[in-house]
Length: 215
Image 1 (spheres, one colour):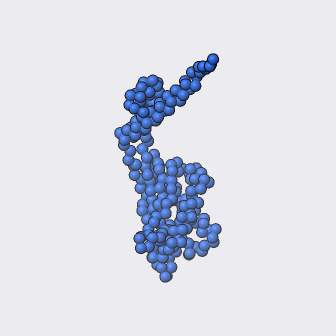
Image 2 (cartoon, rainbow, N blue to C red):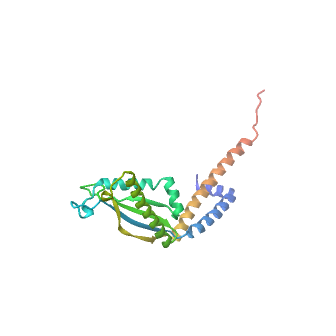
Image 3 (cartoon, rainbow, N blue to C red):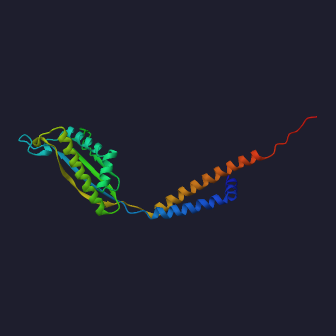
């Protein structure tokens, strides 16, 4: 389709162009007024029990502790667990992500650390939700060891590796407006061309057919 044909189609279906412009303006204004989002995060580490052979918990780490942490994270990501955490006050999305502390020489999860993150509308509620999630992780780890009947002196414990913090996520109103405008222009153009082609086909079908009778 050449530019003159495109302009002719837009003039012919001007009402679709106007409707697309109105929707684009409304969507663009909404995109520039997004509620601030805070990312709250904390890193907890799972420690093996202290013994005379390993007085420093960080020297007795092994991959199975990381596997245990991943199992606890999966249990806290089930629909039932999400419902419980929502009821406890976690309103935004959250995640438990094992941290890979391996290297190119030893690419495995050795240190059983877990990054806990959640999204909130303000810093205070983010830190509050983060405390609920960290406590839930600790309680789930304890419950798991209770079912395994692990002796108290042999239990895995948790400690804070990186203190909780909440940071404001960047948002550029001008970029959001530009993105909404570009998307609106593309969708408006596509809908206009598709509608014009569809109506053109229907118009051709309705035209009367002339039957020439041979004598």
